[in-house]
Length: 139
Image (spheres, rainbow, N blue to C red):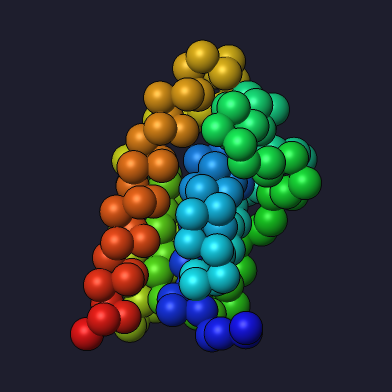
Protein backbone atom coordinates (compact mmCIF):
# COMPACT_ATOMS: atom_id res chain seq x y z
CA UNK A 1 0.00 0.00 0.00
CA UNK A 2 1.59 3.25 -1.11
CA UNK A 3 0.67 6.33 0.84
CA UNK A 4 1.82 9.90 0.80
CA UNK A 5 4.04 10.74 3.78
CA UNK A 6 2.30 12.72 6.53
CA UNK A 7 5.21 15.15 6.65
CA UNK A 8 8.75 15.67 5.49
CA UNK A 9 11.57 16.40 7.90
CA UNK A 10 15.05 17.75 7.23
CA UNK A 11 17.75 17.35 9.89
CA UNK A 12 20.66 19.77 9.60
CA UNK A 13 23.98 19.91 11.44
CA UNK A 14 27.40 21.15 10.42
CA UNK A 15 29.01 17.92 9.20
CA UNK A 16 25.93 15.72 8.61
CA UNK A 17 28.00 12.96 10.16
CA UNK A 18 26.59 12.40 13.66
CA UNK A 19 23.53 14.08 15.16
CA UNK A 20 21.56 14.57 11.94
CA UNK A 21 22.41 11.06 10.71
CA UNK A 22 21.30 9.48 14.00
CA UNK A 23 18.10 11.55 13.98
CA UNK A 24 17.35 10.55 10.39
CA UNK A 25 18.03 6.90 11.25
CA UNK A 26 15.66 6.98 14.23
CA UNK A 27 12.90 8.79 12.33
CA UNK A 28 13.13 6.40 9.37
CA UNK A 29 13.13 3.41 11.73
CA UNK A 30 10.31 4.59 14.02
CA UNK A 31 7.98 6.32 11.54
CA UNK A 32 8.54 4.14 8.48
CA UNK A 33 7.07 5.57 5.30
CA UNK A 34 4.74 7.91 7.23
CA UNK A 35 7.45 10.57 7.20
CA UNK A 36 9.85 11.58 4.44
CA UNK A 37 13.31 11.97 5.97
CA UNK A 38 16.26 14.06 4.77
CA UNK A 39 19.51 15.09 6.41
CA UNK A 40 22.24 17.48 5.36
CA UNK A 41 25.15 19.53 6.62
CA UNK A 42 26.42 23.03 6.02
CA UNK A 43 29.98 21.65 5.75
CA UNK A 44 29.55 17.89 5.19
CA UNK A 45 32.22 15.50 6.45
CA UNK A 46 33.78 12.78 4.31
CA UNK A 47 31.94 10.02 6.15
CA UNK A 48 29.43 9.34 8.89
CA UNK A 49 31.01 9.33 12.36
CA UNK A 50 32.03 5.71 13.16
CA UNK A 51 31.00 6.16 16.83
CA UNK A 52 27.53 7.29 15.68
CA UNK A 53 27.29 4.23 13.42
CA UNK A 54 28.31 1.96 16.31
CA UNK A 55 25.92 3.62 18.81
CA UNK A 56 23.01 3.23 16.38
CA UNK A 57 23.94 -0.37 15.63
CA UNK A 58 23.61 -1.07 19.38
CA UNK A 59 19.91 -0.17 19.14
CA UNK A 60 19.35 -2.14 15.93
CA UNK A 61 19.55 0.70 13.39
CA UNK A 62 22.12 0.58 10.60
CA UNK A 63 23.22 3.97 9.28
CA UNK A 64 26.52 2.70 7.87
CA UNK A 65 25.29 3.10 4.28
CA UNK A 66 24.61 6.84 4.69
CA UNK A 67 26.79 9.57 3.21
CA UNK A 68 27.01 13.15 4.48
CA UNK A 69 25.22 15.50 2.08
CA UNK A 70 25.49 19.23 1.46
CA UNK A 71 22.62 21.38 2.64
CA UNK A 72 20.67 22.73 -0.33
CA UNK A 73 17.95 25.34 -0.63
CA UNK A 74 15.84 22.72 -2.42
CA UNK A 75 16.01 20.33 0.54
CA UNK A 76 14.77 23.07 2.87
CA UNK A 77 11.99 24.11 0.50
CA UNK A 78 10.82 20.49 0.13
CA UNK A 79 10.56 19.92 3.91
CA UNK A 80 7.73 20.68 6.34
CA UNK A 81 10.00 20.53 9.38
CA UNK A 82 13.58 21.80 9.46
CA UNK A 83 15.40 20.66 12.57
CA UNK A 84 18.77 22.26 13.14
CA UNK A 85 21.46 20.91 15.42
CA UNK A 86 24.10 23.57 15.48
CA UNK A 87 24.49 24.63 11.85
CA UNK A 88 24.67 28.30 12.84
CA UNK A 89 24.04 30.97 10.26
CA UNK A 90 24.34 28.48 7.41
CA UNK A 91 20.73 27.33 7.86
CA UNK A 92 18.51 28.96 5.26
CA UNK A 93 15.17 30.22 6.54
CA UNK A 94 12.00 30.06 4.45
CA UNK A 95 8.54 31.21 5.49
CA UNK A 96 5.96 28.52 6.18
CA UNK A 97 8.39 25.92 7.53
CA UNK A 98 8.37 24.66 11.09
CA UNK A 99 11.84 25.27 12.50
CA UNK A 100 13.12 23.52 15.60
CA UNK A 101 16.60 23.98 17.00
CA UNK A 102 17.78 21.03 19.03
CA UNK A 103 20.74 21.90 21.25
CA UNK A 104 22.62 18.63 21.25
CA UNK A 105 26.24 17.93 22.03
CA UNK A 106 28.34 17.31 18.93
CA UNK A 107 29.57 13.69 18.88
CA UNK A 108 32.53 14.54 16.61
CA UNK A 109 35.76 13.13 17.96
CA UNK A 110 34.04 11.26 20.81
CA UNK A 111 34.02 7.54 21.50
CA UNK A 112 30.87 5.43 21.47
CA UNK A 113 30.53 5.72 25.28
CA UNK A 114 30.14 9.50 24.91
CA UNK A 115 27.84 9.18 21.90
CA UNK A 116 25.28 6.91 23.64
CA UNK A 117 23.70 9.69 25.76
CA UNK A 118 23.46 11.93 22.67
CA UNK A 119 21.83 9.05 20.77
CA UNK A 120 19.33 8.49 23.58
CA UNK A 121 18.45 12.20 23.74
CA UNK A 122 17.89 12.20 19.96
CA UNK A 123 15.62 9.15 20.23
CA UNK A 124 13.46 10.87 22.87
CA UNK A 125 13.17 13.98 20.69
CA UNK A 126 12.28 11.89 17.63
CA UNK A 127 9.53 10.09 19.55
CA UNK A 128 8.09 13.47 20.58
CA UNK A 129 8.35 14.72 16.99
CA UNK A 130 6.47 11.68 15.66
CA UNK A 131 3.73 12.27 18.24
CA UNK A 132 3.49 15.90 17.10
CA UNK A 133 3.32 14.93 13.41
CA UNK A 134 0.67 12.29 14.17
CA UNK A 135 -1.36 14.84 16.17
CA UNK A 136 -1.23 17.26 13.23
CA UNK A 137 -2.60 14.54 10.96
CA UNK A 138 -5.55 13.92 13.24
CA UNK A 139 -6.73 17.54 13.04
